[in-house]
Length: 101
Image (cartoon, rainbow, N blue to C red; front, side):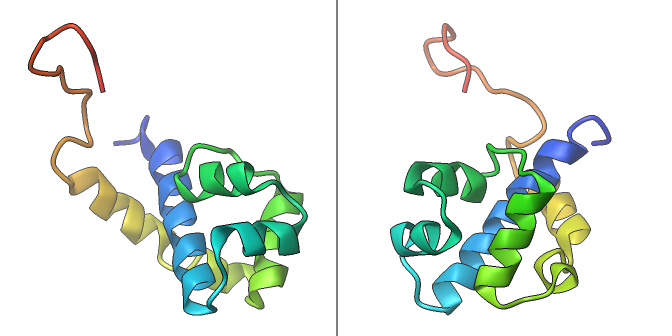
């Protein structure tokens, strides 16, 4: 898990941001506008595909009205749970065997 930890934490952070955003009733596009980023970038953040700068993390926290500690609350635990989900540890071959997911 150690080598996958950074990616798992990014995914957990993205899920946390999505959770807080939806609790506040923002669409992804509206929240992206509020943060001053493009909606597709916000999508990559919420899917855990973007390694955010500290400035962007702070911008997200401020616009969600939460502290940094609240934003990062239980991330390690969520990352561990993500690692335990079926298929998370290794890439799986498709039925054809020619493509990797």
